[in-house]
Length: 320
Ligand code: 3HC
Image (cartoon, rainbow, N blue to C red; front, side, top):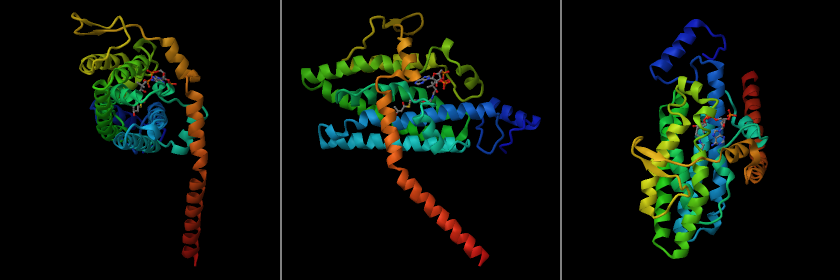
């Protein structure tokens, strides 16, 4: 039942489902603001998966071996699949994939800040797998229990694949760290560029997060941005030690009292500039996405023409 009329029993059913941590399904009544915030988050997530194919796709033609190329191809293809699961989840809320893509290309919807940064060396493929997919897992495992059914179920599958992506990144970096001084320097240089943007992926600090409180009340989010960012910092430090790299933060240290690591101030001016569309690669990312959409128009036109012809034939048969 998708009526927008807030019949008291529908509201009560929705609130009871949220309180019991049951899933809300597409045919259930839901407040329009719940639907709207989910479309916003799921669409932004879907766009991130699709735009996220570009920085790593940049290296497919220059992978150092056939094995690395096959791994990278599989990973980038997985991201396309993640985007499709998420657009499908958004469609169950009444937002078509085409409309959402148009909104992205027009700059009316966002994608993750992290994909605004360029990939300058092959070490970036490993660092994206380790840190970016690592941050994504940290943020997305809790989303497997999100209150909206199709989103939560999509996340279960996505998280399994993201774990593989994180492992392949770590394995690539381990291999490079066992290599030459030049390779080790390449890894460290890449970590230096990606560490802070990876921390920004979790969103603004809690006091500046406009959506967290309501999203948590609705069970869409189950943790705040700062909680997940802290979890990511704590989990990354022992991994960095195993790899033999350091993070570019002189304030990073263990805090015995908090039983967590303290870390330095994130450059929030940079974050907001990226979020508002001034990211270093934003124009390039959107131009590439626009071209991909336009290049695919003939396929959509052909599919629409085929569907219209089939319908016409069915109508003719019915009236014959
Ligand atoms: N990049 C771009 N915009 C961001 C952002 C980021 N890293 N973090 C926050 N924002 C935006 C929000 O969208 C919001 O703007 P809006 O109201 O106009 O939409 C504004 O900044 C304020 O942030 P909030 O904290 O209020 O926003 P949310 O409550 O939505 O929290 C979030 C932000 C934590 C990113 C949350 O939306 C979320 O968990 N999303 C699902 C996960 C996701 O989208 N991940 C993207 C990465 S996908 C990926 O990593 C692919 C993998 O292959 C690596």
